Amino acid sequence: MSLLVKVFLVIIFAPLMEECMFRLFLGFYRNKNYFKWLYYVSAVFFGCIHIFNYQFNSSHYIFIPFITISQTFGGLMLGYVRIIYGFWYGVLLHSLFNILEFIWQYIVDYDLFKL
Image 1 (cartoon, helix red, strand yellow):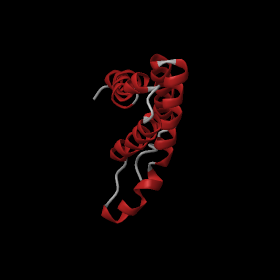
Image 2 (spheres, rainbow, N blue to C red; image 1 turned 180 degrees about the vertical axis):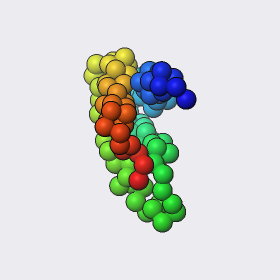
Image 3 (cartoon, one colour; image 1 turned 90 degrees about the horizontal axis):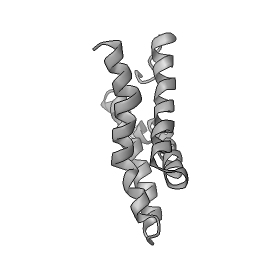
């Protein structure tokens, strides 16, 4: 896969799709009694989906909650930004997170997601 395609997928496509899947609907349920549950569950699902970023064997399954905790907290923060500032600010912040990881991986030549 070319570098340009990776840049597009990591910095534009993935943040847009993930924000649509996990946080776009939050704005529609902001004033409902069950909003808090939706907010926290969407953050946990966001963390869980990122388990596929890592390579490990079956002996590491017990550590999945610890491995994905940073993505879960990221989901909480992106959800907050989405509710307070709007959907597109969440997408921009998500893109910024991905840009930082991308720079680390390709300039420093160390992949954070290979355990």
